Length: 422
Image (cartoon, rainbow, N blue to C red; front, side, top):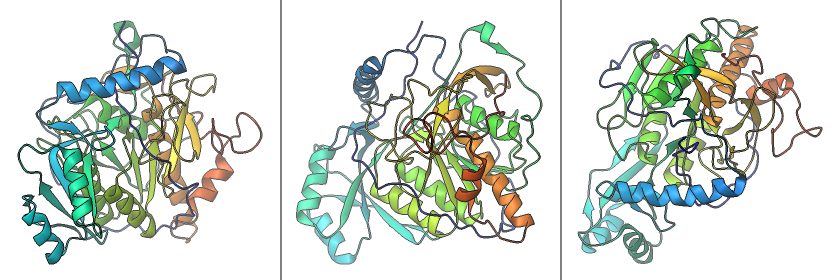
């Protein structure tokens, strides 16, 4: 049997606590056209095997370090460690809020400067800098921060999926063809930032933010199938992986968020995890300020692992997973705060070939919470209140688990408990 997960997660500092109330604007008319078809090879993001037994918490922590080393060793041409040892795009530094004086200083150090990229829907910009030949990324960041201390420089760290599927043929089957019990049709569009969605699921709009995207993947299709199962009619899919070995970067996710904001997508789910990144932090804050509800998985490296992002950003609804007996997954990671739990095991989801496969991981809990957030949007809009207070609506719906009140295992309760496809 293989190990449960092949997904490296990272070393970070904790973020600030629970998110503030999220206000939401009315859905615009810009969602609706397929910007790019979902094409290309199926299976870009294969789902790791989950038929192996879950290891101990200590074993998960040891595996995390091993996987981190492996992914860097196997992808030397496209990745290298940043100053904290986290995988990042090789030879690239992001500069925030560049100006002519700072750019002149950067060029004098031998860095290449690409044209600034504006994220007009978020009110942000970033400039990619090419590290001089022979200089390591960590050293480049140190040099830039010492020379131009008034500016923010960061590596473009990578984010990885937070779930896997069974490879045992006996665990693969037709699965559930209907909606979740009690789930009505949800009209509010839900965006997903992940791998691409396979042709078995029709999406409202799809766009790639990495080389070769949008391209159908197992992980992205699984997330989309769970949204559909939970009642979401309109899915807006951003592929941040394509066929790029260094896909899933912070910059790609920011580009996707900027596009989602321009499409007036009110709820976005992200089943990816990585380290803190200042550009992504600003993008998430900008989305929240403009009314978007962002939902993210807490990862699968166990409770001993450092907090993961984007789930740890205070504006994000952080989601963990439970099994069929509503027990917290032993491998569930942690964020700087925890909002909700949802089914993340003893369930099935669709792969890019349209097969229903047993899945496990916090990846698969996040879209179920996003579906309930979209349903709250529906109810508020029908009542003439715009998006309303999504968090308050979810709190009323959540079923308390564990000790009474909010806790570190289940957050403020279980959502979509009847949404598990079997």
